[in-house]
Image: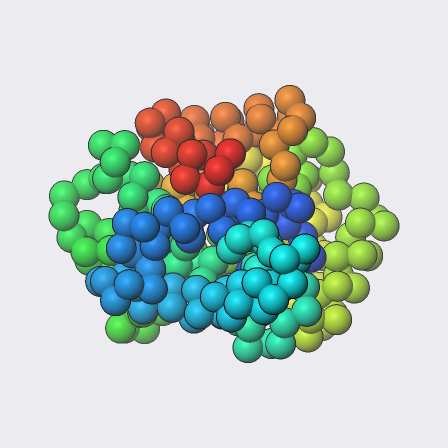
Length: 253
């Protein structure tokens, strides 16, 4: 099976929408302002890698004002030309960011369960490192659903054509993804979009919120088909409209 954390990092540079970096940057800024990343808070550690890398990118951009554009611009630069370790940090940081956005959306939107009911106890896995084999498996499952969500969203305004598949798989190969991972991605892209079957795989509301947020990284949301798909995804997974609105706003949509 693919290493889905690394695959998310590769997707950020090769499959995600042009707006993905700015949306992830917007979410990271919001989480940092709320004390959930890079501030030594309870969930900060899992975001430190990507925030540290971004700050380094911003420092370099500051020396070239024409290249400066905030956290989103730094993310685009890092993913586009970064080392495997940077891309790994982007993948892990993306999971932590999605988990943080989901937690804040569910608590602010009134859809969270009792305290301590997240996958990692007081917070979702992704913001918290897994401590048991069961938690490792749960985090890997979430990562796989995040990748599938991005692929499904990319299909929402039509199938992914053969030329686009070749381009994406070629980029993944350049990123160091092995043959098995490339084949898995190709098979997922080749499948017809089946929202009902995908929703069955989503185990809980926490993961549904992460999957919805991940979908915003894969598309521009500038067509009726994309907007309709997001509405159907939110409804099919039972996300409260207030939760959806919070996620959209946090990610700058």
